[in-house]
Image (cartoon, rainbow, N blue to C red; front, side, top):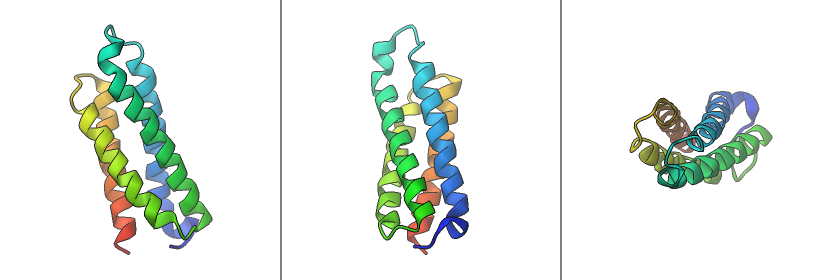
Length: 111
């Protein structure tokens, strides 16, 4: 695993995904039936956390970056699957970026 410049595209997608997941979680707390959104909110927060961690480890050139990218890809897919169950713009946006981030993280492991 190399450092920041070699991984910039994936790092940027991870950071964007984390920001959108945080936005989605925050917006979901305003839903009329917040209890219905509880799993979505939880997964959004978990996804944001792992995306930040993946971006940080890639930036550091960590030998563990490929492992965290695999976990990040899995988490992004789980989050996207949940967000796709909800009919609102913040969940649609979140699902889209989660799918893109997952693809980028999987591609990191194919290098």
